[in-house]
Amino acid sequence: MSKVDVATRVTEMSLPLLASQGLELVELEYKKEGRDMVLRLFIDREGGVTLDDCAVVSRELSELLDVEDVIPGHYSLEVSSPGLNRPLKKPADYERYKGKLIKVRTFDLLADDEGNRRKTFLGELLGLEGGMIRIRLNEGQTAAIPLDKVAKANLEFEF
Image (cartoon, rainbow, N blue to C red; front, top):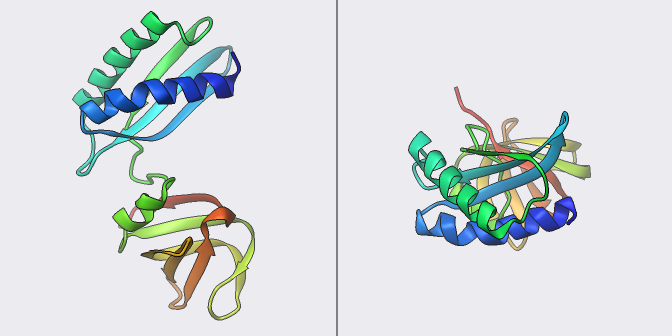
């Protein structure tokens, strides 16, 4: 089974488990690190996750993976919160975190409303409208970034 197949199958298996705990899957990684394969899940909920949440998911998912025998060979399972710089992956994330400071990196140079072209946009998330992420940049101008042009987006920690 390929890495993509494993990630897809584990995602399908983990979603009902997470939903039953009131949690969401933010991101799932299955990749080689050093000599070993690592399966890493980042989970979240409104108000954040606790160490106990991570431990419960780790234990229950581990048992499920053992029964289903989805992952060939040896691997390490890690379950954690997405941290302060939580990635924004789903369209709903751009509504949920409206008013927060975000950083968006794009695949291509894009212009803000003053014509300045860049690949990195840092500012207050205004929301998602018609497939466009709206941001009030720290310099004062705004930008509209098409979702399909986003290479990476995440919350930024505010000091």
